[in-house]
Picture 1 (tube, one colour):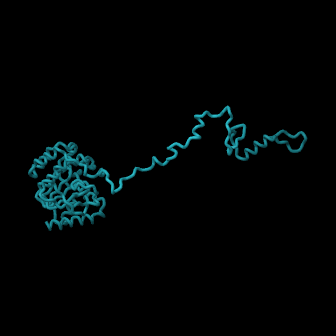
Picture 2 (cartoon, one colour):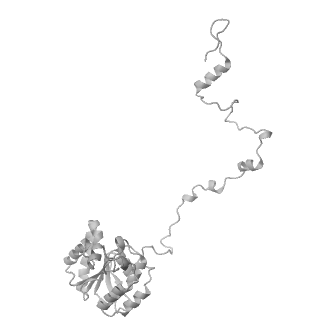
Picture 3 (cartoon, rainbow, N blue to C red):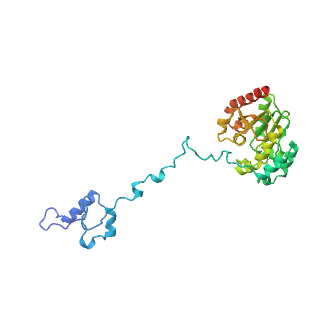
Length: 298
């Protein structure tokens, strides 16, 4: 913007307002927000005409609300139970499982191994039976001194109707053979007699439906040594909350009210887990050696 020429000659006169505007532009001002400059460092005093009503002015005099005073409260996690205090059992623990009354009645009525097989085949109280292809009852010798109990049938087992016949079963056979056992002198079964869809983890209700039968099988077979393969089998049969890492390698006992004596019981890793974690085979091998020594003693 150019000021009109000075009639007196010389340099053109500059309007003071134009000069002020030019100075503001040079200082970085780009927007016009009012006709009167405002001192942002000084709190303005409202005029009587614009004095806010008490409801509007009241918040400035009130203390901060609780949500402002405790901004971190919603993010504080719930306290975990202290190990020394009473707490409900873990979700995965078998402790709250209650046996199915119908299954318990049918299992108690069976007096022989074949009668128990027929009772399981006729049982309709487990929903897994509707989705499975075959009943997977057992494999091996019912008169064996060693009884091995796994978790549940897989795809190969469901198709053939026998436990541990897939890749993990082949590894189990090799480990048993290394300690002088095979399916001719070992009885192999599972906690569940039907395959869970997609090999998912069995529910407490499904375990409860089959538990009376597997307990009755132990009573009928009366093995000298019981080997539990995998975390589900170990926690279910021993009614313990610990995981397989803490249960494996320890000699415990399994007993029902009808048994004259407890059965020495040891837990170990499931062969499927060993296939995924071959570094743990050393510990599993120690468990199988412990079984061989115990069989030689009893």
